[in-house]
Amino acid sequence: MSGLSINNLSMRFDLPNGGSVQALQDINLHLKAGELMSVLGPSGCGKTTLLNIVAGFLAPTGGAITLEGETVTGPSADRGMVFQQGALFEWMSVRDNVGFGPRMKNAPAGETREKVDHLLDVVGLGDFKEKAIYELSGGMQQRVALARCLANDPDVILMDEPLGALDALTREKMQSLVLKLWKETGKTIILITHSVEEALLLGERLLVMAPRPGRIHKEYNLPFADLGVNQDLREVKKHPDYVPRREEILAMIWDMEEEIMGRSEGEG
Image 1 (cartoon, rainbow, N blue to C red):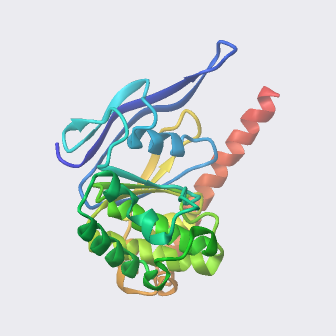
Image 2 (image 1 turned 90 degrees about the horizontal axis):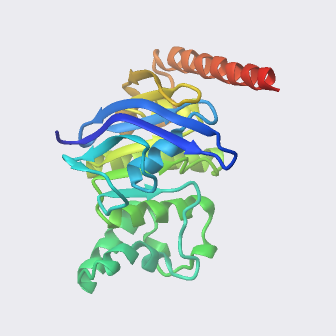
């Protein structure tokens, strides 16, 4: 089957004391190429664990993931990751960071330079190519991280809270950039976030996960990401369905957090 398929996926972590933690249980999901999915849920529900398994950083204890019919067994260039902190090479220039992947593949120098220059123009950093990473703001560093990921031309882009550390205005600008890149590149994107508003705006599909063991609690198909490609996100928030969906999901997450707190107090 084409696209990304997650089949009966489970993940158990064994503890030194002989116990275990069931982080994920029986996750089943299929994403067609080019879909944009946001993943939301209470703390500890396994969102990042799921992303790390899709990336190939962790091997599941049950089930499997396939991409374009091939089983995922480890990291690969067909899946790119953008972390909360850019994980950039501080000692390299912006240009050298973005071009790192193609250089490791021994791509022709001229071709790499052309690709890097184009991507930096796309993410609005055309005038900062020779700057060192430490000279950039947090938002600019995340733009570099996005460009570096795109330079490797992955089929799937995995984003783990990539905008969580940014101030509100920069975050909104970056959300618009993510939507622009999604439409222009046709990449499949999975984005983890703790922000209900961000999940609504950046999720053509929105997945709400249940508390541990992490399971799919509810899925939404939403119009807001498509609307945000050509509209100011503040205008998108005026859509008549936006606030009701936001309040519904906020209440859902709040109830889950209350359940987790009650469970913890009971165990104490």
